[in-house]
Image (cartoon, rainbow over all chains, first blue to last red; front, side, top):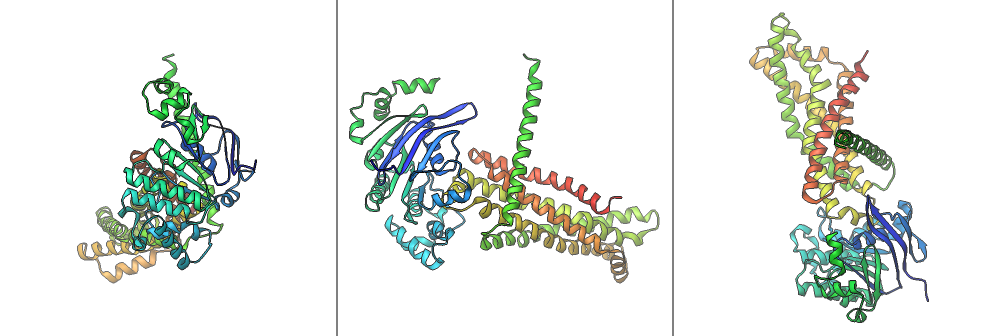
Length: 256
Length: 260
């Protein structure tokens, strides 16, 4: 088997007395799309932030292309981030900059091209996510949430990254907009060939965009497999989450 | 067990104070270090300079003119008892340049600029924009903090220099039009008593205050958390801490310049 694009081994992270991650193991192959599912507050975002280097895990190893990325210096981290794109849950657009500069931010900050060329690329990426060129000069605050999310997606793919992270890509969107975002993610993953890691608690979305689904529960990956296998899964935790039942092992955890 | 509670509370406050002090010191050192390392963001720096220097002119100017006016009025009341009205020009120009313009100006800037820095950076923190900067290979320290600190250090002395002139003019207005002084003699007195060190010490103070205001605004914004409430707390903390530090450093700097 080829070396995984992203490899997590025993990643643990605690905030004070609260142990959020207790040992996450996960391999993501090149070009694969993996969705991490799990309830609110189970550490999905923390996992993502550890891989992105926004948080440093307490222990464990995270490798990207076989290279250990925990404890890197800021400069080395920037090298890694060059090949990474990230769609934030709320879009996280820079509200002091017009839309096109938001999309082109990575290109400009890495000095990959001049402002004119960056603008052209930004307009092209906006078109890819179904936004008109005229929108490039709008300010993010003037856009609807769905549009902001699409701009966020355009920004994530602007530098043609090899790895893209999606944080709750469909949360807070209407079903049609959610489906459109799902489609865009599938497109980016399949046609551009990027490795994708998403976190979601939206099962429909997870089935659409994931080649593989991993369930995070009590700080560990308790189940991983193809979307088709998840419905027949007998593991009570997975079963309860997938079918959204109130009764089951997860509820006990909430009460405790 | 109940008897331990007050000690526990004191201990907790003390520990959190030490933690904050350490974190602030590291933040300040890191910010200063990044001031000397490229890349720079001139567009953002210029925008901050305009925000601090130009748009603060009205509020600082009004503060200075009223400070100068009231100073002339009050010192007249005092000096008239000793028939020493001639010293009013002296008192006004020394008080304005050494103390009132930098301190009052600094406090106004802490309210106007420091608060907006904390609110803006704090909102960027809670909406994950600062995380987004990092993933886009941009150092938030260089992109957000350094331009504001440099703008504060550079622009506040310029602003306070203007405030010096306006403040002295305020004293002049009251002395001439209300107290009936001869304008040319008043100006002559002002010039004769003024020394370079008076103005320079005030401007050095202004520069330090500019650093403190920008540092507090950025620090509290950078570490804000918990949505709108957290940003509100960050804004309050930045203004309060910057104001207290300004008054505290004002004494230290006065001691350094004029202390025996």
